[in-house]
Image 1 (cartoon, rainbow, N blue to C red):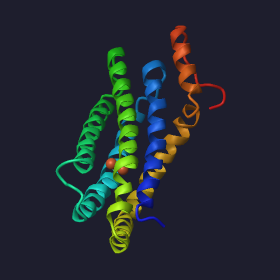
Image 2 (cartoon, rainbow, N blue to C red; image 1 turned 90 degrees about the vertical axis):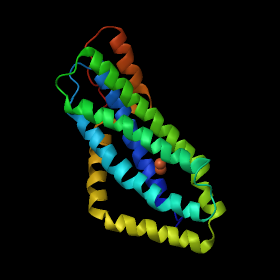
Image 3 (tube, rainbow, N blue to C red; image 1 turned 180 degrees about the vertical axis):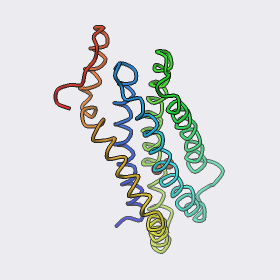
Length: 209
Ligand SMILES: [Fe+2]
Ligand SMILES: [Fe+2]
């Protein structure tokens, strides 16, 4: 098993959560009957899984391991990744605050919340693209066999220490994905919602959901 296999799997999980958020953002933007309470759930799950578990693992284990092997800490991809984690935390905080005001959103609030959610979606996808292209390959190119084994063990220890939190967060993600993500993957749902909204109709869920 690759040293960083758990990080790659988490990227896939966060990617599915992002798909779900994208579909939910469309509902916020266009659906009169959107379940506003779910915004707080999305924000909470992003904080718990993406920030407190995944980013924490990258920042406290992966990046220091690369730094110790000679990868520059203050220029290049390592500071870029840390900087993006801070920017992403800001977007999530904005959504969390909006979630606390659920039920009191004006039409303009909904437009802005949907735009922030979509910004987080795009930011997260770009962040994973950066890590896949420039960060994760450094493990194989910069770490020796023993260093990779040490990294793998450290990541596994982190996961074991947080096993119950991970299980709970994954269950919450799965609920959001099942509810929102399946129809968004093909893009059909996005087209359906935007076209129906453009026609000025009340929007309902497509039959296949
Ligand atoms: Fe990551
Ligand atoms: Fe990251």
